[in-house]
Length: 517
Image 1 (cartoon, rainbow, N blue to C red):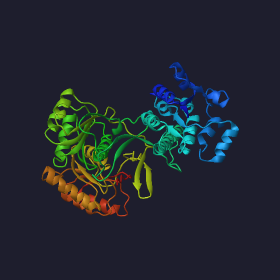
Image 2 (image 1 turned 135 degrees about the vertical axis):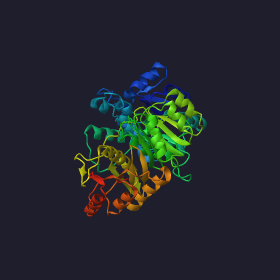
Image 3 (image 1 turned 90 degrees about the horizontal axis):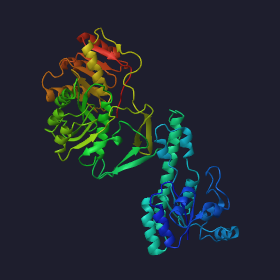
Image 4 (image 1 turned 180 degrees about the vertical axis):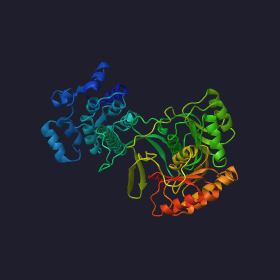
């Protein structure tokens, strides 16, 4: 029995090699792996002795030779294959232990050059892996040091590797090489600054954790992260306390974080079931928390809270009075962390670069039956053109501040979505209704129920898409709304403008909608 050992990750390779030799396996090795074995007194044949051809081109060509690939691809049960091997003087290779040049580690280095990245694209390694995996019935191919013990155990106990294990190893190889090639393709696309949606889409992610279940207990779930440095993403957060995040925790927290990134001043976002339920901005984080909490004391229970300033002791003392699932902050005062850590079921996460945004070219992907729909993320808050006041009455400076605040919030409310705000605090949010007037009426009802009568008096309103009729303006007037921001673009825009003029409501068109489904 013969084995090829050629690894970049040399974890456990010497111990593996010694075990193989003790089992009577002849070792063939390359480059740095051969040097490592020789240094540790493990007998091995250098690849150039097998091929009869020296390594060349700075090691770019080592294993690309018929003596290697015929030995891997020959089907032992095929008489013609074995006859040809004998005629060519080539012996079969039964075991392959190969892992690839560290392309991922290379591209993650600060200041990496394209030349460095390209030089770390492995050619011979994937070729050997694919050849051995294709002939899995006869060859066991191992890419992961974690699988060394299983293979050694079967060799010791049975004198060979079972077909079931070989098939598992084959699958693992093709998943690995697919991941490797997808990383390379993604890197090159970014290097070319190619912002197009490609004709074929191959994405690769790495598993962070398995989850107990998905959105519901009968669904399986896992969390995967993109490869690379993703500042400001939940995948980069450090969990300081609490149980593992669930599927719903991650989904809801991500939505809350993306909304938070729209704000520069101290801001707190509370989120429930993928929708914001309370948002507050102020001069300090305690005041921002008080606004967010007061906006909806009911829905925040069991919710997600994220903030863009250090979580202080005074905020922690207030938060500790209610049940929260997840809290994310860029940092924690030691006393704050101690207070919140007393609560067994809260998850506390620290995300240093909490305000870092995704690149505008990042993908938003949704699975549909039979495929996926892909778009670039909704990275723009307002168009480059100036906002257009379309009514006789223009917003005051204070109203404009609140309009922009509400516009940031409604961008992250499920459509049809309406948000009303006053003093940089949400006082009502109407998400996910099948018509816009229901979303508006829900907003006003919630404001009255959760904050009190007159909560919407003097507030402003933001709509994620245009008003199809003037009924939303009529309802806004009855609720005491003084200014409105919406995209405009309806064939009945003039009806809404006329109604605003009738009631003295200021209205601003953005020319941009923010549907969110």
